[in-house]
Amino acid sequence: MKIKCVVLLLSAVFANANVHAADEVLVRQGETTITAHDVQLAVENFVPEQGRAELMASEKRLRDFVAQLFAVRKLSDEARARTLDAGERWKIDASMERAAAQVQLDHLVNGQELPDFDKAAREFYVAHPEQFVQPEQVHAQHVLIKSEGRSKEEALVLAKQVVAQANKDSQDFGKLAAEFTEDPSGKANGGDLGFFARGSMVKPFEDAIFGLKSPGEIVGPVESQFGFHVIRLVERKAETTIPFDEVKDKLVRDETLKYRRMAIGKEYGRIGKLPGIEVDQDAIKALVKPLDFKAHARAAEK
Image (cartoon, rainbow, N blue to C red; front, side, top):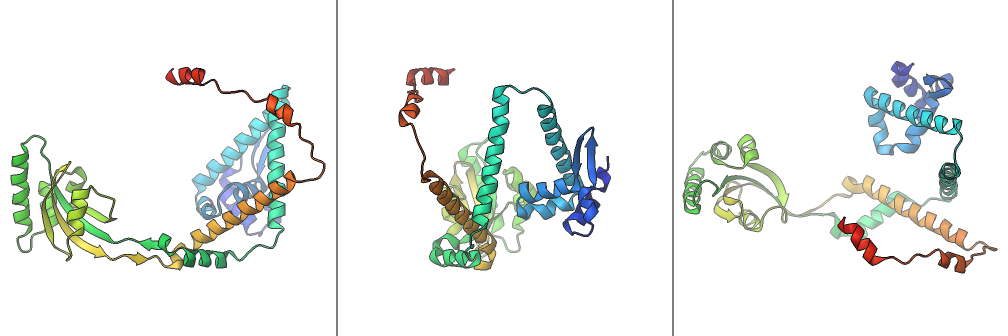
């Protein structure tokens, strides 16, 4: 095997630096082979464009990719080398039909004059501003005192003690959280919850933190189903509109897919209206098998 050379070989192929490298055999077993050109085509056809560079940058991932291609081809060769029954032959023929149909659809769609997807993305962005609003967010720290292992009153007393310490001048809230919080993750990160918008936390907690205005403000004890919280506002971010440049790539992909779906739908519609199509509606109707709801329910109970 020459898999060790795969990275260099594929780089050469993709850069068109060496014509003969495309025919270089990377894996061989008997008559089954995988060439650098096979891998190039597989990457172009089976790997999303945004993931190709990452694949090409990792020798391990390339090795795994080549190994998978070889396994598929070997299994295919083994299937074709034996006598297939009618059902197996139909599966292969049906798969080939689907692949050929997809090739023809790509040919028809790509042969059309494509719209300006950048322009379409910009128009969608302008027409749907509500979809690109970054809601108000807060960055918070908290200390959680649970009622487990103590009475609710005892938990409340402890939470009030934490509030008193937190309100002292120059108090390091992170150290306070690391010492008192009973939230497992809070022990390690000083009770830091990062930024979050409304709808991310339980309502009592959310109402309390979004009611604070200035960084450094502390509120508590706030009761929730988890216990008593002492909460500190670290920072607020006002509601903003996400800039077009930050969502452009996604919108262009969306518009491209939208166009392709529409164009493919038109082609299916065209095929359905071809002259001379004959449909035996009665024969189709005869294939219908009413659902036995009782049998279906019995099967679901098992």
